[in-house]
Length: 382
Ligand SMILES: NC(=O)c1ccc[n+]([C@@H]2O[C@H](COP(=O)([O-])OP(=O)(O)OC[C@H]3O[C@@H](n4cnc5c(N)ncnc54)[C@H](OP(=O)(O)O)[C@@H]3O)[C@@H](O)[C@H]2O)c1
Image: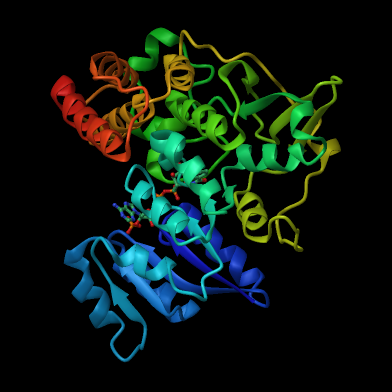
């Protein structure tokens, strides 16, 4: 039996992870769950999966959760040490972090310090602090297994050759709901249109990130850190069907792709079972029925977020934390109907230019850059 902690179990990835574990319950046991404020769903999950401990970040929800679980022996935690308490338990084998946004960075650091395998969906942690997290993981002998479908695809394709034989990786992008939308009309798109992703059903923040192509920018940065690549070794191609999840090109010209219908349960399961595979219950790919797959170059003029992502890869330092924090604040402002869709990327670019760049930051410098970017973005959008 492998014991799993799921951080962010009430979100889109968290719920899919529980689906995967339902199917693999002969081999995987949930020992801890966490959420921000959705205490009712968390309570249901506790009743079904019977973890030893559970944590809720929003302190206003602790009593509601406790009352709903009266008579249940589960340990209920809150506060900044709760993640440490859950993940550092000796019986924990894998922690899947599906927290959204920068809130996931301290959790990722706790998992690494506790020397537990980290299955990472929370790409923002790497975007903010990949330069600190990756060496820390190495030092502690911790494996970081990507959950993102593109990075899972790269990890799988990399197994076809040796590291020094890799020429570049090619990350696919659906192009989002506005792939064919005229550039001059992008400023008029609504929240509802932006939340209507053509191929993936995800949490709100990543769905907006997919519409701006900010998600692809975050993934380019994530790939840099996970696979130790420079900007010239990471290509993005638009592939509207989301069947090829990413590819690796080797030095002899061979290109290895990982394919499947768009279903996050596949990369989630691979992250849990890595380096092995288990029978899954995903719908199977039928290429003849699909018929055609399409590819095109991304339009960085229409979607400047991707260009900014490459700038972050090239500059490193505090640029990732600034980029991520500005984007989080701007996405929330768009979701609150306070700004236009095109203001998201404009605000991020403005804050990246303004911030006091540090090339080799400490964790404190990164947290300061995050705080500065959140404040500055609010000011520039007000
Ligand atoms: N969804 C996808 O298909 C997908 C694919 C690839 C990568 N990812 C990445 O996976 C992560 C999660 O995405 P998602 O779509 O699953 O997001 P989501 O549906 O919004 O879920 C986010 C989870 O994080 C919890 N959370 C939010 N703020 C928190 C805080 N301050 N402290 C502790 N927990 C907090 C939420 O709790 P409450 O429910 O209580 O608010 C929820 O459980 C993101 O980094 C995303 O980029 C997602």
